[in-house]
Length: 117
Image (cartoon, rainbow, N blue to C red):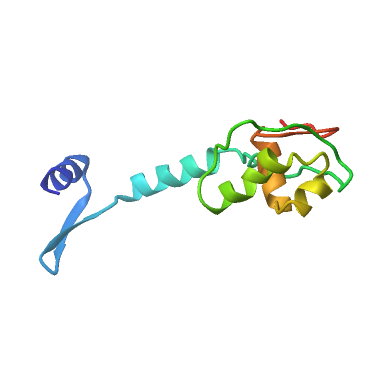
């Protein structure tokens, strides 16, 4: 903690003590530069968002191993044990639409006619 206070003083920030603990107040310049860094970033959609498919969409490639943990690993195991051929069969096997979107977006499975960036 002492090192960060010394560093803050060296940078010109104000240091106050409240309730016996030191607080470092950011200078207006550092707050402004932090805002500009956030604004400069471009929006990056998450993998799997925006994928469109129907219940008749065929599943072309299935995984051989399970890369997941927890509750999603139990649902993912349905790909390995039941080997569904369509999205409807995967849902009947216990997977959810969110699981299928996520798995296709992260290229764990391949869906016919669905392009993943």
